[in-house]
Length: 140
Picture (cartoon, rainbow, N blue to C red):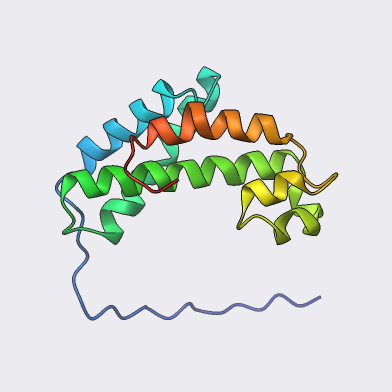
């Protein structure tokens, strides 16, 4: 097979790159939040989480947002990345029926055989980790 070479064209961006001045504070906040609520259990997992620099994405996406809003967005975003990792590790990508009902976790938990964790575990995780971690900053 012949290898083809191509040049990736330079991307044009009509506005300058910007990063929130709150990046470091948001990063520290979100990592402390994840640790405080036990969203990562092992030190190795925490190091991987820290090295992923997820809050940087938020600081670039919302460079003008106030610090308190960035904290919420960053916490929620990190939780979504962690949920995605959990789902990958549980093999849920190979269970399309499970994904069809993810928009309503509680409904999903009642569908026989589609929730690998069980309704009580989902409720416990939400009640003890997610809701308190977000500190009443979202509807639940």
